[in-house]
Length: 505
Image (cartoon, rainbow, N blue to C red; front, side, top):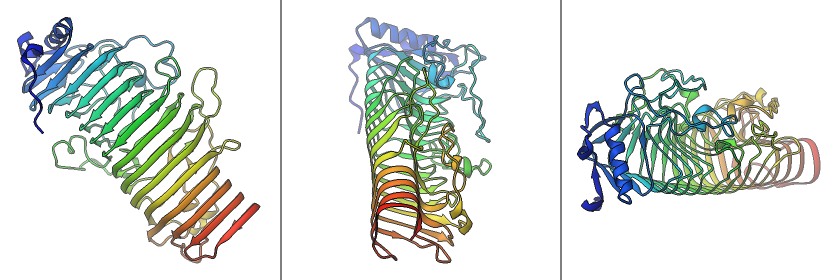
């Protein structure tokens, strides 16, 4: 669909303010002059015709739209050539999440406390000169402050309202392609993001729609919802929808954008990211979240994590396909890192509905995992209409494994080592319903299908679990109360009305 014409009375062409667009001249002073003129006129559209606009920090203002014409590139200058704005002080909120989350001004494009701001059009934001703190080939990085004058984010917005980001692309976005913190009424639509750190972080925001986006982020998360303490206060992440998006961690940075879909770097399959995640920063709550009609392609699976006291509730995930998942297809973790002022209490996770999920090629060492803490169960989980095909290849001896609790550990599926089950590993869970679910494997698999440990009120109905080789159990119950299995293929119905310490079925 063609973009509507821009009224000439409100159009501020950056070339009229001295921008060259030649890829050699530093154009950010001219761009900022155009933005200032538009703001002084009460608002308008700052227009980038085709060209390469070498830039340091671009400072957004209220009632301003940046329009990137197709063929227009805003290119981040190397900090050795020109200096980015210095990070603003953040004494109150800078101690409880990493450096990149805690500052906004040290970015290519930034805005704080704005209303009615937009970046639209078919152009490209290329963070070529941004620091991501990340090695391209190993994925290793250290969290340390940038050197003065460095930029580390493509777009950073703090406490902005009525924001639209639409139709453009981001290549190499630094620490974040998009960092939005404490923003409300935000639309992110039809973006392509190809970067080696987080694609977009929606942190302590409300009323946000993310739609029709494609992201390739081999070394970090693609779409990440957070509720950090970066604002210096507790603020929730709520009323968020993510729909019709594709996320991947499989391709070399840049090859999603150019359509070549290359993987010429060394084999990094075990380190791939590219997923959709809630957490890890979780000081505020997560409420009223929907994720639907999305594709995960060769990346980590879905993750929901509360480790800093967050209450996560009323989350719906539906109509998802996952291919070549390198760890748990579903990972839900309640932990006790408790990073925040005054040592917050352990949070909660409850009322999570996961339905209509199709997974193939799930990594053999893992299972879908739901893991709370002793005395702090994850509650009220429903999983329905799910089909999972794992790689298989697990050893029968793994069924006896008891993963460590690691309450304060960083929440990743790998924290537990090899899973004792190949389909589901459930520990410290209360009230879980699993129905119309099929899980099988490709290579011979020797493990138990489902392990329940410290679980109460568990119901499995109309479930098809491929039995492991050598007569492996379908279910292993450890310290379980109120268990029901009905219409489970290959075993008679079974009901446990009391408590069992150990039972295999």
